[in-house]
Length: 464
View 1 (cartoon, rainbow, N blue to C red):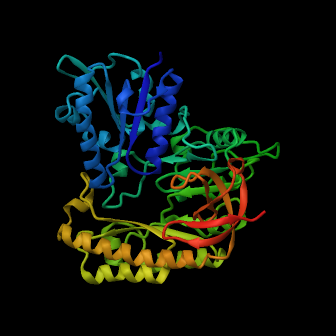
View 2: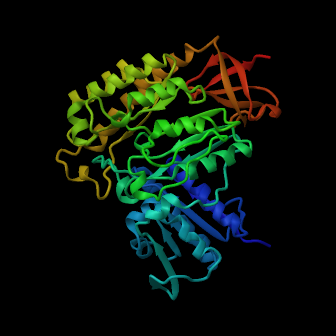
View 3: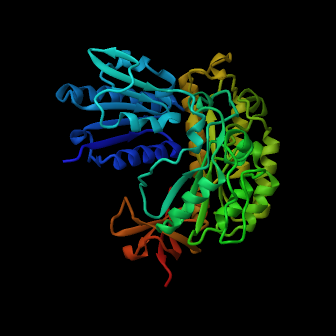
């Protein structure tokens, strides 16, 4: 009987994709996926430290696992992700029953640990070997790890790792390292293989996909030109994100291309033209604004003013009138007064996003914002967050109502999670649509008439 693994993932799409890689390495080593922690031989918690809430959930989950370890001392527990990178071996002191800690840049080190009772010794506790792998790993961007994909229609593909922006509130440069782009040939090979396997949609992942290629020649050895159907191609030299999109667009069988996340500062006119010209690039962009106040944007070290941001929104909508735009908002940043906050509310009213991810400011270890004066109390931060969410709920619902009666193209993803009698899929603008139909439609593009708008989704009927 093969051993079983279980992965508990916290955080963003990049963390979910990292968990797919972790699952791929276990599967290649002969492990089966457990149904839950009860029947697992190895448990991996893949952590996120972007916000305090995610960190507290992790500590709660890890504390709960002590019962399972006490019941079965042979159970192995590993901690991965950003909290692992930040806290390091200090986690052993608080949770001595943890066996292995590895950071986002050291997923490949799992190979040395899987199935072993011991490994490279970093310290000992209770006569048990404990291991840490938290080194800066420049080769992470050129290693092709096995991946166990969650879906069958859509897949995530990392095009770069780390970040060089050092926003004052963000831990990513400290936990995921400096920005490193993957080689063009590796990205193209992975996407071509995914298309051959039947995947129809690809989402390109990076902390700032718009800056792809800036340091490509510095971090990676030159790769041979990628031959697009015998028509020639290009090597790593002087390629940017727009060029990469054009190459991916040529992959046979691929129906849709998405990407996250875009930094406003690096959103170029060339990229907007590329999005406009390539029909398979979805008419949706996630462009985090964070605040409508120039003073707060400066304190955040975002590198743009709200006017500059709005000009890029206007350029996107001028080129693609039907584009859906989503964003991130932080409320209660240190020093944010009522006037600053009202500028953010005005930004929501002016731009009318299709949706937002909003969070109250959270103190994060190692970030510059921790040392700023005038930190706000939790009550004020929470009240402002509630006001942002209430306003955006009105805007999102109104924009969804405007879609009633329209016929939209939907990529069918499978059965709906909320109603197993229905199918679910997404429009190119990333709207969730539920409708009746057979599972034989999975992976196909269908036209759906929108019958009813809801707050977070749409109901419709397939047009024969």
